[in-house]
Amino acid sequence: MLFIFIAVVYLVVFHLSFVMFVWSYWKTIFTSPASPSDEFCLSKSDKEQYEKEERPESQQDILRRAAKDLPIYTTTASRAIRYCDRCQLIKPDRCHHCSACDLCVLKMDHHCPWVNNCVGFSNYKFFLLFLLYSLLYCLFVAATVLQYFIKFWTNDLPDSHAKFHVLFLFFVAAMFFISILSLFSYHCWLVSKNRSTIEAFRAPTFRNGPDKNGFSLGCSKNLREVFGDEKKYWLLPVFTSLGDGCNFPTRLVIMDPEQLTVSSQNEPPKSSGASQPFPARPLSESQNRLLDNESQWVEGGSEEENVKSGAKKHVIVSLES
Ligand SMILES: [Zn+2]
Ligand SMILES: [Zn+2]
Image (cartoon, rainbow, N blue to C red):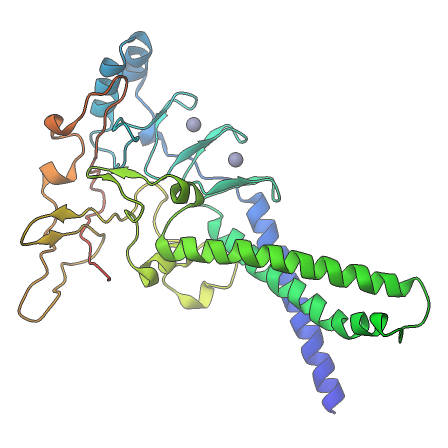
């Protein structure tokens, strides 16, 4: 009876991990990278004007005007509006152009040769689950082969070609397990910080300058940004990430000697303490919009910086320290 029970558990775990592994891998490969919507493209007249214009400053003026109502909070390091000449669009926050796919990818993480696809907003959750189930599958294979692997070294296996299969299987499973474990651990850390791989190497520039934690809302909220609000879907390769890939909650901190105002999203202002209300007032229009305050723009050669408010979502943040 015990034997049957163990056999059933073995088969269920084996098949389940394999099915989930294939399912998440399939979704990672075949989910097309999400591109910015049409609202980020320049209008025909703006495009003509932009192409006709030779001075970078004037081009930035055109972009600044076009980006005025878009939900953009980040700029280039030199504080210019991020524009993709190739796709001819204003890049949303966290969007980057992938030269391999030749398109702008929302919340681009990296282009993965293992899945021959861009990992970004549309499939980042699938990619993480793919790593997780690959890990479990490798662990399962290595664990079940282990006893025969030991027998190989103690010469207890029948002398046939099969014994080298055991050796090969164990080494491959163990090797993939170790390499995937390091990659998965790194991405778990990135998720907890709400950072993409690209942002881990180059911090996004906000109105107050580069801020590697600019999109971090605290570990729990960061996790929900990728996996969604409903925990029952977290381990399934179905899309549950929050947002639209263009508009992200940010943590714009306005430093004030007496108050610390942060911006977050979709949340009513909170109180940090019973007697002292958390100064989570919404950013004023001028604070919120990158483009409203021209004097804040540093005209530097061909680039300038802006911080915009696209204010589709209201952003008021709470600090989780
Ligand atoms: Zn592009
Ligand atoms: Zn790509």
